Amino acid sequence: MNNAELIVSNKAVSELSKHRPLRRYLNKLRWLSLCLVFAMLIILPLLSVYQTYVASHGYRLLSPSGKHFYDVMQFFTSPFTDDPANSLDAVKGSTWSGNFFGFKISDPLAVLGQIAAAAAIYPAFLITALTPILFSVLFGRFYCGWICPATLLYELNTNLAVWLQKLGFRPGHREFARYLKYFVLMVCLVVSALTGTVVVAVIYPPAIIGRELYYALALGGFGAGTVFFMLTLLFDILVARRGFCRYLCPGGALYSLLGRYRLLRIQRQVQQCNDCAKCNAVCEFGLNPMRDDFGQECNNCCACIAICPTDALIFSTRVTDISSQGAGHLGPKYRKLHLANTNNICDEDAKA
Image 1 (cartoon, rainbow, N blue to C red):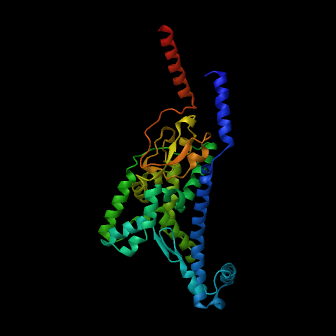
Image 2 (spheres, one colour; image 1 turned 60 degrees about the vertical axis):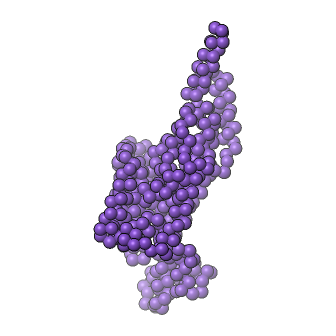
Image 3 (cartoon, rainbow, N blue to C red; image 1 turned 90 degrees about the vertical axis):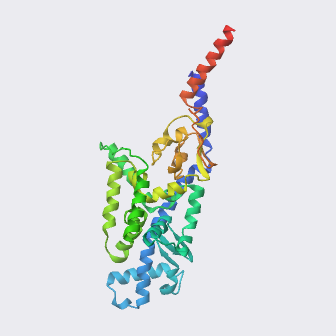
């Protein structure tokens, strides 16, 4: 590549950088969504405790700290309701299953686990999972990237691993077969069927976080689920980057299956790609966007879109990924091959 080509390429990248499309900011919107979901899991137990205090008419029996909590919650809820003892029932639950102003929604894994444990289908419960199932069919493993409260903590945990690496600690980067999580899902369902218990809820991070936050805020303590979740964080740092979600999470397995033929998926524009590999480096699930390999594991988190310096990654409506398009046209490998082909053609023409 000569200096003139390098200057033209740098100018092209610079011009692209000046006009960022809105899709580049979707990753920030996703982080906002995750923070709001996590805040909801903190607020709902507090509302439940306050509702109990109001319904019991026991303000005078509360401790000083209890009275302070009551007064604070009354201050924040009074603009919205005059009858907290009854009206706060409109919002209950967690990301596992909940009722939000009459709209009942459940994690599909909760419904599947209940079907396995009870050996029966409850239509009313099944209906509550239809919305996330539909969204998964359309947008893929979006729950894992945009809704799951564990994702917020896991991505912060990844940042911690990066800081530790700068301090000289080497995080684990082992890789395992992705089908392991499907095996975990199958085992959980079989055990649920044999025991009559929804076993999957014991190891499913979104269910654990919602349950443990309720224990901590409403009951004043933590359960064994906290220990398990901390072990998953250590597993991600010491063994495999985002290892639990990639290799062991039963919910991740179910959502990957539901989103295998998702309608909305990320696609690379090979003409604008410069093969910088930043998209591959930022992908928490170890995918290969630089060579068009997204697959059913992609959760449309948009991190690759946000970091791409040439805006080569876009959304497309396809039920399958495009097969590998080869090297990016702005990258050195493509230019080298293109130049070699051009020289060969020139040599053939000269001989002719």
